[in-house]
Image (cartoon, rainbow, N blue to C red; front, side, top):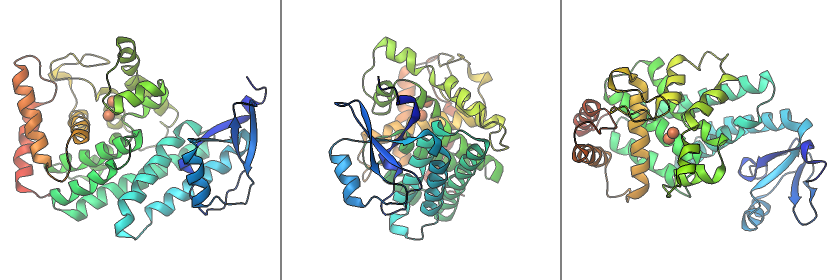
Amino acid sequence: MNSSENEYKQIQLLDILPNQVLAFDVYIFLPANNKYVKYINENDTMDEDQIQRLKFKKINELFIHKFDIDKYNRYVSSNIRALLDTDNQQKRQEAIKSAAELIINSVDILSSDGDIIEWNNNCIELTKTVIDDIVKTEDIGIAYDKISEYLSGSPSLASHSLIVSSLGVIFAMSLGNTAPRTLTEISFGGLVHDIGLGDIPTQVAEKYLTKDEMTLVEVALLKEHPRKGINILQKIIRSKNITDNVLKIVFEHHENVCGKGYPQGLAYDDLSYLPKIISIADKVSFEMLDIDKEDISLKYIILKIIREQESKGYGKELLDKRMLKALLESLSHGRTK
Ligand SMILES: [Fe+2]
Ligand SMILES: [Fe+2]
């Protein structure tokens, strides 16, 4: 292992936007030489070709000096704001997805209090954008089509989180919850519900997000993610936006009506309202991976989930049946409010 290893912090290639001046040096790691080599100098930019070349070579991880972490976080933040400010409607979904990638990827690089406040503000900006887009769209079918655009490319934690956040808002509104505070909690909770997946082995998280088969050991590791999520949020908890409801969403989104969920094995009467909505959004998000988005409506997916649950029989239900039926009913009207 290289002696200078601890001097560097890994960042993601997709955090670097083309033609943006970098406020820090960027390094790549050469395994053959066991060495970090400077790739881009501070105050230079990377153009689209350079980024594509690295992608082509499967160099998706870059490095920065640890003393540049603050500068890097400020760079990420300003990119998030720029993306969310975009007026280009055609590229809007792409920009929102990139902003979500930046937010989710930067969570493990937060070091100072300033970084944490900034990260939280970025989450709130994204949350507001998600809610505004859905409220303005009004028609559920159109809102759902926009959400489906987040699926382009291979499934990532950010795209899954964004889809669950957006579906959570649609479902909450469809069930009659239009209070801004509730929508913010559901959208924020949806965005961070799986943040703990970043803290379990990458191959396990990837298998989960792509619905790949897992060994029993991998399943056991996966089941750690709600608790790990809470641990990650502890450092951000001073913020007023990490409410009890947000924490409950993170901790309880894998609990089941039948009491066989994890990590606590809570049963129906003990399940909280907002985590139940996010559990449904989570399930729908995975169903969306299997279907041709042009042919299948959200209503169809909910109906499929209801039928699947009914075929399992009494005592084996995972999701709240009454909530699913109320959703189906309200999706038939097609309006978000
Ligand atoms: Fe999860
Ligand atoms: Fe999830």
